[in-house]
Length: 131
Image (cartoon, rainbow, N blue to C red):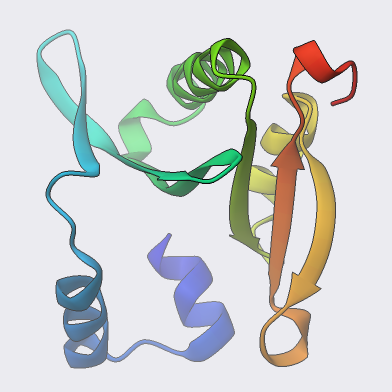
C-alpha cells in the first residue's frame, strides 16, 4: 500500500504516522492470521445500508494466495445475510486491487478526491438481484 500512497501523494513518514494514529479504531480493526502467523489487517465499518471496507492490507508474502479474496467473500456473505451492500474506496493507481474487486462483483460508483485519485466501488448483494 505504501507504494501506492507514495505514487499519489509522496511519502512523509511523520504525516503517515499521524494519519494512521487519527484513524485507528481498535473496535473495527482486526489482525488477519494465516496458519497462526500475522498476515495483515482488516477494518470494516457498519454504516446504514452497507458494510464499508475501510482497509484490507496483507503482507507481501500473503498476497496472491487467495487470502484477500477469502476475506472479501466472507464480508460479502455477511452483507448478504443482512441484506446490505459492501462499499470501499481504492486508489485509482492500485490496478491490482481494482481488478480483484471487479472479479468479486464490485462495480465503480464514483471517482473523487484531487484529480479523481480515489474510486468508490460497491457490491450490491445477491438478494437484491444486482451486483
